[in-house]
Amino acid sequence: MNFTAFFFIVVSAVLHASWNLLAKRSRMSVAFYTVICSTAALVWLHTQFWTPVPLLSMPGKVLLLMAGSVVSDVVYCLGLVHAYRKLEMSTAYPMMRSLPLIFTALITSSAGLGKPLTAAALAGMFVVFCGCLLMPMAKISDFRLSNYFNRNILFLVVVAVGTTGYTIFDSQAQRALMQTFTDLAKPMISISYYSSRGIMLSTTLWICTLGTAEGRSCVRQFVRERNFAPVYAGLFASMAYVLVLLAMNYVTNVSFVQAFRQMGLVFAMIAGIVILKERCTLPKILGCLLIVSGLILSVC
Image (cartoon, rainbow, N blue to C red):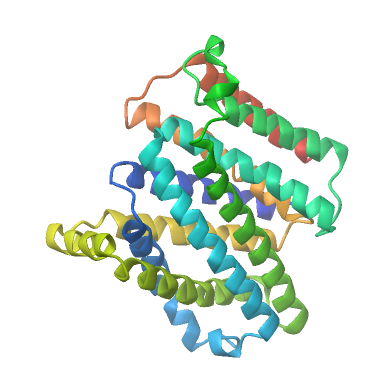
């Protein structure tokens, strides 16, 4: 993985941690996520008016892959809402970030998507995974399999499946666009795709939100209280994922993107300690060291 991809992902990780901190201060709901995605779609809507490949000009194959990405993102949203309602942020976030790393590596390797991962890369990703598992614990002696394998893990698996799905679908959709429009620059392809994807995703989420009494009530509450938290979160989230899409163009296997996105855990931990006054525990420090070590190993 080259420096360009590394830079994009690190900045993206900071932005991702930032919008999750905003989400942590609010009651996560489908409506909250809908406003996040709608804000992101509006930020990049202008792209539709000057890109050579707006939504209606996307090839059929790309539209199918985009639809798969949107469905995966909705699955991610539903899992995220329930996970945050059932589990503490310090437990849910590391698990939601670590499981997709393993799922993505397994799927890309078994399906032959991208360049095969080396033994060092796979080992590094496993070290990152172990670091993610350490971070939720208060102390090392608290390690119990029951803390990870219980009925609440179902919501985290749903989040992981959704994250893995939209990561792979988006990667393949961009590859298909590059093969069709060979004269377009990679950043143009990523921005055009993200804009079209945002329109499709936000439309789908609004249908889901306005189709339920709870969703309509949440939207009215946002308007009544002038709650701009999801809007700010949407601004951070939109920039974060555009950078991820850009980074996908500079890696040989999308698993590297998934691995380096775990840097967000380090930034989230630092922000949690400094801003939210959370405890700085030994497992968190060891977990961060393992994550950084695993990332270094994965690119050696």
